[in-house]
Image 1 (tube, chains in turn yellow, green):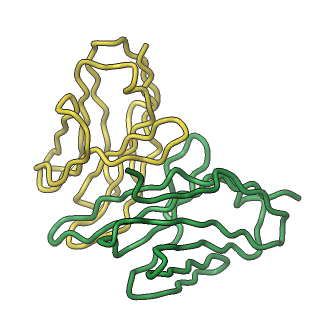
Image 2 (cartoon, one colour):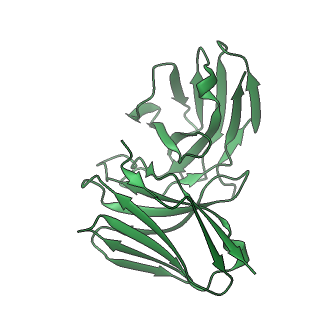
Image 3 (cartoon, chains in turn cyan, purple):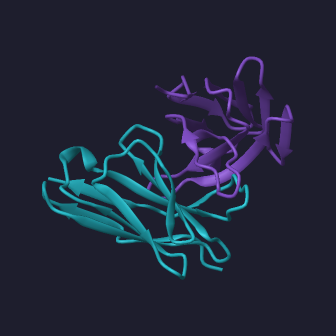
Length: 113
Length: 115
């Protein structure tokens, strides 16, 4: 049973560019949440997708957008990249219906130069 | 506004001894608390959790204590083993009806278990 998978593992982009990160949830999970972890900080909630809709959103600008597909996989898009967007991006999956535990993927390390 | 705080960035404990990691929170709406463990180059791994209706939850060597009046929780690891060396994150959530909860994390405590 595969856990949460993310691609790519590492990515280097230039300021102003756009990036797409991908996530496949754990089998049986229907909800995907995205988190940003800056160096020395804890993960910060970006947004959550369920039934192909954004259900909750953290304090992130509109440059951050996402999508969920019918097979529950998800993408995170970031436009007009800033140096401050350099971070580890974590995807977590869970079941809806009042679930608290989330299971994380290994993350994508994004470096913006 | 840091709603979940882990005030000790690091902790060093001898193998076999008890490790105690602390966490404080400010948001009274939080009703569920989780601990995650993170190794370098890996995502956080769920360790143990506790609902606000309990004050203790135990799973093998790991026990989490919750003091609601003080808005404080702690993770006890007994006995500590070298493989426990990792960064430990405290997280909190408030249940949303019909959707999964979002997690609010602390900044983490790096635990080093020495021989």
